[in-house]
Length: 59
Image (cartoon, rainbow, N blue to C red; front, top):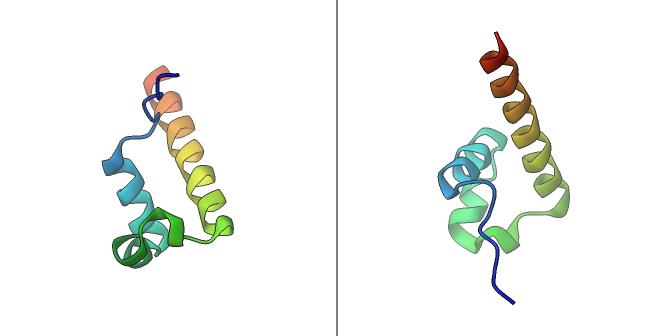
């Protein structure tokens, strides 16, 4: 089975990690070191940014 490409770019993931204050954890331990609650927050923030981008493009 072919592996799917991620929806979020690596740059966006790191930008969101910096915004939420987990970048140091990602840099030291990788994404596996980020607590699940913070991963959920990363997803929530990504969705918010996508919704804002869509709203901006509609105007």
